[in-house]
Image 1 (cartoon, helix red, strand yellow):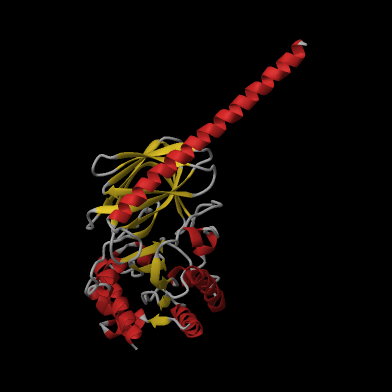
Image 2: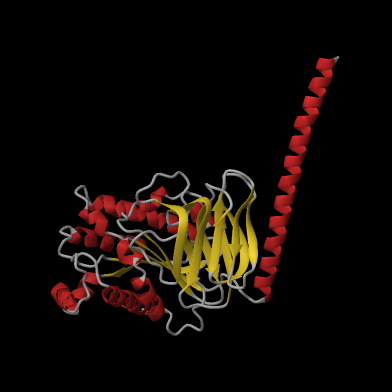
Length: 372
């Protein structure tokens, strides 16, 4: 009899635990849904949405400095009514990188980068910020102001509150993981700067969608990136992290690191670029493709093969081809650019001003092609 009672009480204990867990999960889901509903209602009231025209760059260190992207944005959208959104932003910037719209301050997050770190579920752009307990990530806008829609991509191994969030108005929120081990977005209406603080060691950030009113240019870029880097990003990223944005241009600017590799082949480079284009077409069928050659450093001996592959790909994909080598040659050549301090000391990269010239040139070239 005692054994039967013990088994019965044990069963009741297990049942009660499961019931409490289910109730806790229901509360988490309801609280998160309620907070998101209020945020979305406020964003709708203020007409804040993702409806602006978007341009996305993909590239290596030439893009990752941010200067090329900023100059492109200023030239391409100079006649636009409003350039007020940011677009999709990776979880953090790595060393030697910069963002054209945001500055980051990281205290206690480990930054995983798909160029060098093994990870099975990279978000778009291939950056994950993994927290130690009490780690903080601060985000500050460089120019833009006002209230923004902010969707924060996060993941943790358990359901529950995993981050706290504070904005410029000292409003505090909780970021809650609804389902374990799945990337989820939480939506807020926020004013910058923001501070995200980890409540759980191992909680992860995958990126941010930041929008207000107007057009935007965003980018995925990493120092040392090859054209094949996007193969390391999860399949789900291509639908989840593009969702809501309307991109009219995808600008692909790879080739430097591919060409410096001793095993480089023109066909291999063509195929990896083709694979990226196929993925991009699945996200935005009406977006125009732009293929940009790398800055023509004399260190890149295989540059003619890169240019050949990009020209052939542009023909095959009906893409706009932008030749930065021809631009540099027509404006003083590499030696002239070095003399005018438009080339960095390593004779491979450009200076900040050099990237600004290239960014403006790309924008003008694209606008001219789209008129024809």
